[in-house]
Image 1 (tube, rainbow, N blue to C red):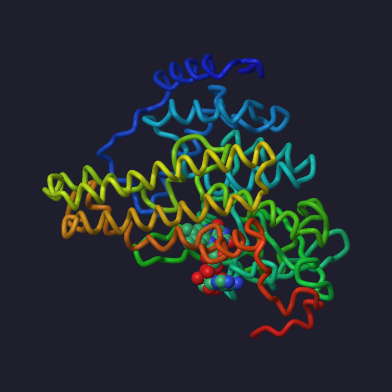
Image 2 (cartoon, rainbow, N blue to C red):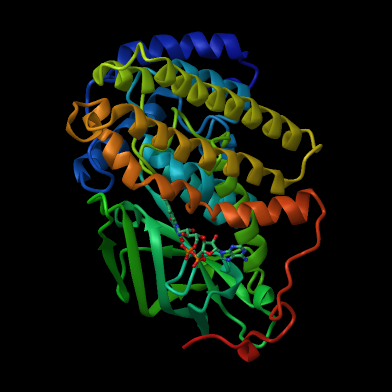
Length: 410
Ligand SMILES: Cc1cc2nc3c(=O)[nH]c(=O)nc-3n(C[C@H](O)[C@H](O)[C@H](O)COP(=O)(O)OP(=O)(O)OC[C@H]3O[C@@H](n4cnc5c(N)ncnc54)[C@H](O)[C@@H]3O)c2cc1C
């Protein structure tokens, strides 16, 4: 279906409203979502939903037309998200596929990578993941020790990555590797777009405290990568990673312009409905409980305003990309505080209750996730202090040394 770039937001909204009502199942408010990563059927359904959006002319709203998108504005995307709130959406594809990986490829990839991978993702044929963090730590991303060595026209990848969200269900991953050990740490890195299911890659699922197995770890043993899998420049991987981290902070902060529907449907379970929990616990008339509900509501409103302000600031050039850390930090604070309030309100019902309150306990076990995914809140505070407030930069003894001379544990 061809959509004119001149279509105004209101007519797009009305067209979306009619199409959704006719083609997409409505959400069941009482359904209990499966634990993240434990229901592979959900992935099949997700791909089908994305294909349906594509066939209906509502996929990749803000991605350029030449790469399979609709080339429409953020306002069109916001209108679609508002209209689709009551319908099943392929939320699993929001993070990291559409909000992080595809925009990074759009900004830094080759023409061939954009045409092939962005459009495949929009069609629902390809899912993208991130191979950044390593067992030695995720905060010091420029210190990765997974290596890629040139071998004629190809590269050979060796090392290990971890905490890759939903990589088991994905097809390709953006993988940061060291390609020059004599250059300082930020200048010897290259980003690769790696086919996940291929010889030399061993993947294991990581079981978390709440029973979920959405995270994976990967081990690379002489994985052969073609030359055209380099994203950006050889040894220019930090520039690509920086762009990726910018999109990640924006996505985790809830401000990505590239996603349909609310939330990721994965990083955590949907945020608890505190009013429903209070009713289930029989506490909705207690003044203190009402205050707690009010606090959560206020934080949510402030978060929405912050997202809007930072997005406008960045799109108009009044704020620089590090401002994404403001959204990311506030989202984490809102997330864990809401989980805490839910537990305080629910009490024992948080473990034994039904769909609404019954998930409070699961959410609480994962509450720290929002302070780590997309870079930790401490790193977000560092970025805000150094790059937004202009405070002195954290000392780093290894910044300008050849990486081969940097001391590290074996
Ligand atoms: C929900 C979720 C999804 C994720 N998805 C992915 C994914 O898809 N792909 C991927 O590659 N990774 C992913 N991660 C991993 C994530 O990027 C890392 O957890 C994060 O970068 C922190 O790294 P780490 O856990 O190794 O902690 P470390 O880097 O070991 O840090 C440990 C602690 O020390 C603090 N710290 C470290 N350095 C500093 C400093 N300079 N100043 C102040 N404090 C510091 C940190 O804030 C943290 O509290 C995910 C994590 C979560 C929770």
